[in-house]
Image 1 (cartoon, rainbow, N blue to C red):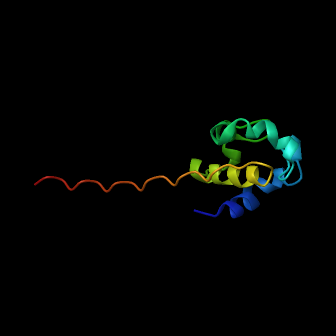
Image 2: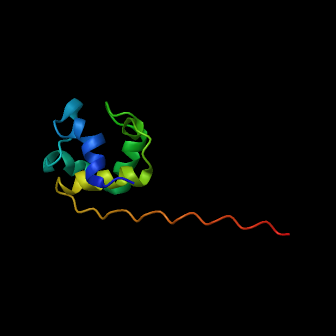
Image 3: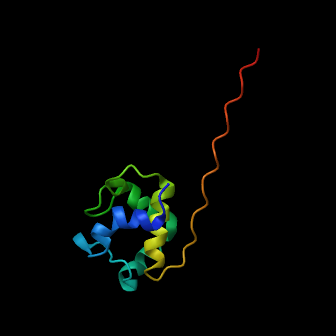
Length: 99
């Protein structure tokens, strides 16, 4: 999994750095304030579904965990104080078939 900084730089910054198509600019506290009220789950839901000119999942195949990490990074640079989401638990190995 890439770091949140890498994800923001590679995926999100193209629109959120310059405010393309009314995307809230990273660091613009006023633009992010209404989004921050939604909390991480509300913002993640918007990204998963797509919003405005942003395609569902920001046009990527990133996991929910990766999307959430990027959201936290951008939101916290923009006046938020969101906590990084917990990493998903590793998958349990399949039980060996009974003999």
